[in-house]
Image (cartoon, rainbow, N blue to C red):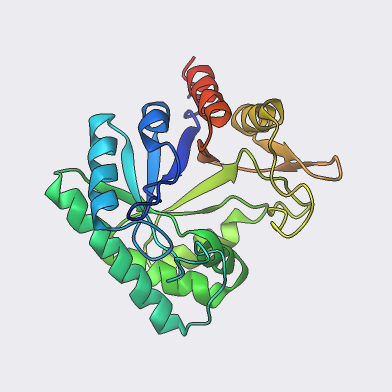
Length: 246
């Protein structure tokens, strides 16, 4: 049996009011999955509706991208919540995007938390359980970071009957434990197009990534997160898409 092709996913719909962000119209044709912001860390009702419609036009799967309620910090600041509150903010945001999907007659395919909420989910089992509980209401898969210990998260998700999608990042450096280098550290984000392309292809072809110390770590990923917020990165996403399609 041939190995299923690794897909490309991209964070989208992050404009807000008169403030544009990203190049969704140029990136959408080259990705498989669009993680659409739900209004808490970015976006607004008009942007959400427009982005869902754009994904439908290009036959791209729509995913909800909920985060902490932190527009000024772009959802990258961890905000203390109880487990019940985390479940509720995820329910609220996914429910909103699901309504726009129904309006445009497209299915909602999965949920991928954003920023600090994503990081907290991977670091704190209570947060992970709270998010899994919310996602179970919609009977959708939850996208999380592929690590050297995927089984740990699969065991918890099984309690809530939530399938998991494991993702890796093309433009983020990795530590020896298979986790991302924190953004606060030097070289956490790659900017060179060849470095990003080579890491994405290493993940897609060999199921591993080279860490900041030069060692290789196995990563079983279903999808690779890419970004297209400038002309160079858009060209890179196109190049990756065309290579993976061969």
